[in-house]
Length: 100
Image 1: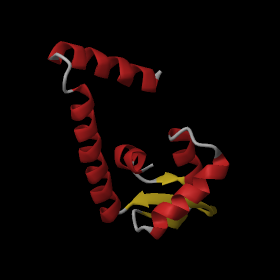
Image 2 (image 1 turned 135 degrees about the vertical axis):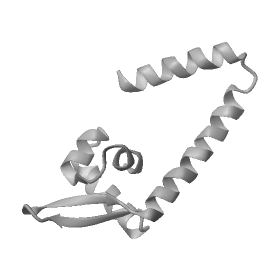
Image 3 (image 1 turned 180 degrees about the vertical axis):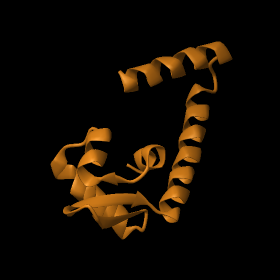
């Protein structure tokens, strides 16, 4: 969710759930947890008070950067023994699989 908010900006809870491919029943719980940790802020939509808008906070951005660094390290550790060309191929295949 943090990554999606970083990439696309402010979103309604429903839109964020669709973009993250999450079940609606899990979206509210996830947003509640992120809000409790100060990583997102939820505010009523000024155009439709029934809808909540979710915004990435500065603390959420810092957490996202920490997670990115941790993932980069894990990827480096996991793929370290492979030749550079194989790393590129595997990374490209995994990225394509995630999007497809």
